[in-house]
Length: 560
Image (cartoon, rainbow, N blue to C red; front, side, top):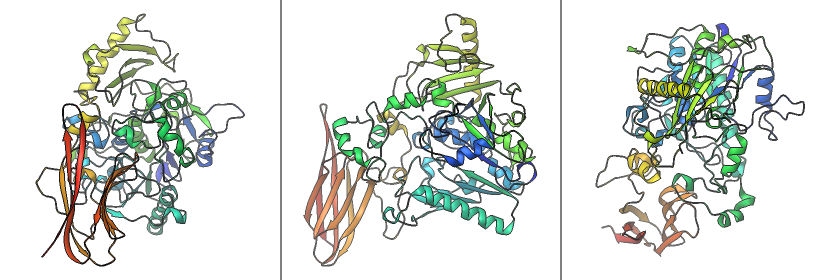
């Protein structure tokens, strides 16, 4: 919060999920290690760093906890938006009884802005023809600027301002990058608000700082889209791209081994809700007028569900019984305010369950139980045969010593507690589908025989568009040709995977780009010269007992 009234005046809240924890060594380079992060360093120097603060292990579910103060399954976000299924804990729809912090504060007189990644719009509401009830403005925010999916190209982002798509303000050749654009927009929102009412402002900003994430495969990747499609990376194919890492030409990700290293001394990495390597992130709270301590460290155990009650207590705003006429469910989190000026105060958090993509854990009063299970993409199942481990995190924060054999009664107690918490929060049934099964289970636009799209309209998100993934289809376009016609007729995807039907140099092209792996498959024929024509492509998915493949052909005919 910035320039808020009451206890929140002139403060700022910043959550952090980065790969390295800060040490107390005199030579400590600060947050980000050798990559300088002066703003976060400045906030930490004048605020507090929490060493036992936890997420859900994945971005979208964690953000739902920031929004509501309830657990992610209770929010319907047991997984990310794109992998939503029909089960209540995994449907990607925050229920009305879990009202948002923005709705509460806006009703109390605050201006509310969301600047940064969303990823909490239900996948069935991605398209512009969908209801905007569950977009940021529908969740209580006065303004929004960013993207609504899980990721976007930082040089060519899919941008949304408020409730509509907008073009990026400049191109990479002009020095544009999304990080600068989003900072400029946040400043604009603040200035606009201060012109009318300088004291009441809640700014929700999502910093896109990748944590210790394991999607890069054992050898690293120059195209993370391979991971999302269950396709293996190839070192020999990646090495020629080494000088293009970090550029618009690459969708790169470091090897899984580095994810493990970055999480040291904790086990595993993002997606593993069972271990601290997937859930424990240092967090900085900066509030000069509300916190006397400067540059200190706090070790109380807390979770992302605790942010909402902390903000409400700091701002002196009570949790309402009703929001928009709907009776509210109790908050799952507890306030962290007690710890601001009491470094040795015992943690008020008593219990926190964890589950993500089939991995499970539970912490209670200094003890933790965790299952040995692989996360997405595993399709492992066998949850009834799970092996549980036991750690005494008060003395073994790294979860290095399994005490299950020494304390079987404590383990049995925690396992029973996990199932109790799971029942309260809609965690069951557990879901750990593989890539193919996940694609089949996720939301698809309602099937119909014919889809019609018009020129001069905005892009259609994949989830809301005609499904062309792994199926046969015919795609036809009405085009009026002139002697020098050229341009794109219809594209889907990008250089990292997709297809395009276009005209160039008097030729009609259909180019199919399989996950950015060369060579592209091209079909070419002469383009019509003059007049109105119907052109298109027939794409046939061929599946036999031994192989899968595709067959495509271009078509053109004169329209009378």
